Length: 78
Image 1 (tube, one colour):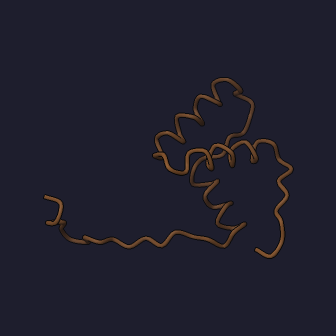
Image 2 (tube, one colour):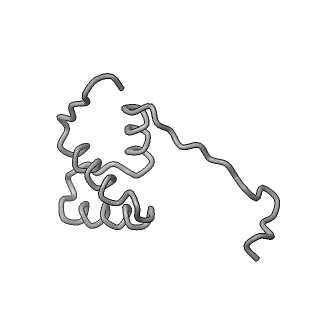
Image 3 (tube, one colour):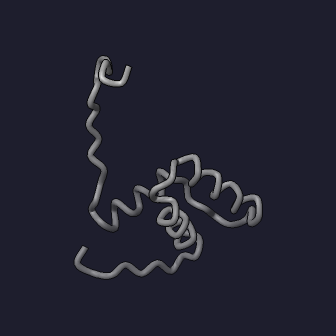
């Protein structure tokens, strides 16, 4: 992007903060934090992991490149 992104939606900003804080954690950790937040504040909208990833990709233009290393079998790890 060639410009700054301004996030005025508090729920979106909160979800982005969770996403950034759990970048090196598992999806399970993100989902657990999300569920804990929704239990505490059930009326808030805390975005799902796929939806926040899609928003970040749209803002930054950075998308994951998935490459399956062992499409049929994976003898290297057995």
